[in-house]
Image (cartoon, rainbow, N blue to C red):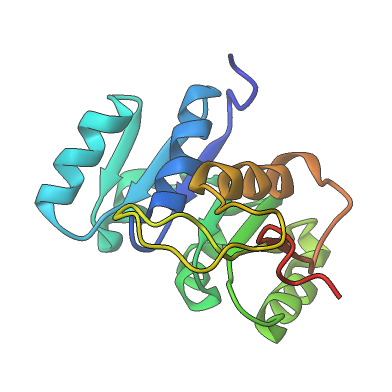
Length: 180
């Protein structure tokens, strides 16, 4: 599958299960992916899991990994402050997707307003009741089961790729917990 071929994606922040699921889907779809991980051990593990098509680097090495003039089409992160250093490299018409649990963030709206003139969309996924790797989870949401990191990844990639007329939105991926 080459749905994302020709796109460069950067997944910033801790290499959480959600970040890894996002990176896996993008790699499988043919995107060039840069994923950050703090420790050398973690970088080795992720390289083995994602294969040679993904580049796993320390957070401080993202810009060097992209090379001079290297642009980014899709940027996934856990906080607005994390994406700011890469905004000059973000291609016009690109997308930022934040993982923002909790109440709606004014930071998402502010960044969306800041980048709209460049055609860059900024949205957030808000995961809740996601299955923990150690088997411990919260009480069950109305859907009667815990969610999976893969389900959050699909929502994040939808916002980045397919939601082309959507910006400033926070999409709950929580099994119905945030319903009115």
